[in-house]
Length: 520
Image (cartoon, rainbow, N blue to C red; front, side):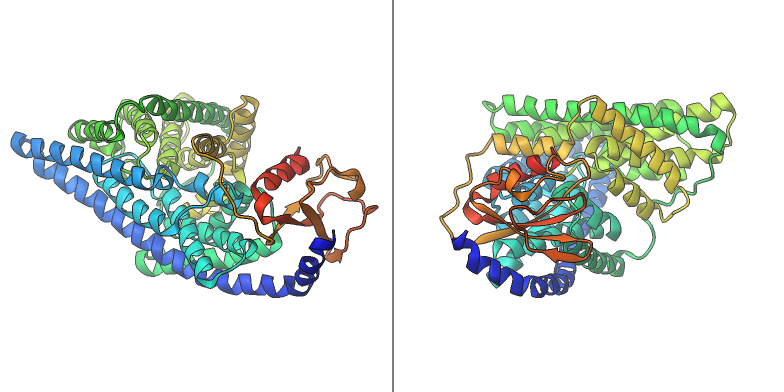
């Protein structure tokens, strides 16, 4: 371990300084990522407004309609060229950030930012059923990476800043700072690091403040919910089961659709994506509500009273078109569209429950809101993020128990069905399509933290009894507010925070090995 001695001494001297610097720079990253996400949000808002303006203009005019379809084909070809130029800009962006944090990917920040802005804006203007939230997370992370490279920071600091930027991007996209940091910890890091929690929270709060300057302080959703009597809580259990099944089904269809488009690789990507743009054009003339992110569908539930048959039609078409839009590889996320699907499942379930059990009509928004969180938990498998996200997006804390019940059940059902979290599966697909990342030999070490769960296979084992990777060193253990210098006979306990030094060259493989070792 002599080769690590200098690094370990430096670590002990600089850990406190690093934590303070990360917190301070987290605020700066929050502002920069927030401004980037705000600009992206503006681009997509104007693109969606322009889309519906065009659809209103061409209605009933065959000649202009033909020109619009020609424009859609052209936009599809341009988006395909953009994705071929920068493949990491395809899709959501969340798996790419997760892969970057784990050392599997090394994205070109300026290419991703440029491609995501142009490709994402064109995709929404073309009507594809994609969201802004995943791209905002990726853009925030890439802004943080550009700052890290500008300052020539080490990999450990860069990972911390990437996480701050990712959380800030989500916070600015949804006006949800707590959900931003929870998503980073729960979905990207899969661990609760105190320093990351504080730095990320500051970044997300700053990003949310920036977004509120431009978009105001009102909640994203304006549903007025009522209280569901406790004697009807069995309905929440049924709804949770339904959403767990729907979440597993959603993941299955999304991955199959992505695989289907991949099997068509002999057909030029320009034709594949342009074909989806043409489908968008047809839907724009027949069922325009399902286009783009789905804001018009939410507005219909918030301010209108659509018939149950129309709700069912919109749900099915939105689901299928979202699968096609995402499967073709265009830049854009699934975050907001899946919330729309959850809302419509809740609307159907609520309508049936109200009419069958003679419940008050004002309970319908309650079912809509909690179903968004439930489907999110079933698909993404991040229930805490879902609970916090929907609470922040509605500005209503009173429904947290209902949301938690449905989200927990949906999470359990999806797990029992063996459905993997969607972003985990998407990252695996990305890694399967690319060659192994080559990393130059380097003496640099990366500091990684792991929280030991109560059921971890390494619990109550001594350091010397664990099969550690040869290129790593357990640098310190934080326990009950105290820092322990580990020795061979040091016992690992539940709740310990392990700080592990990993050689930069072996970071990706060792990171994955330790996640499996610690979490089982």
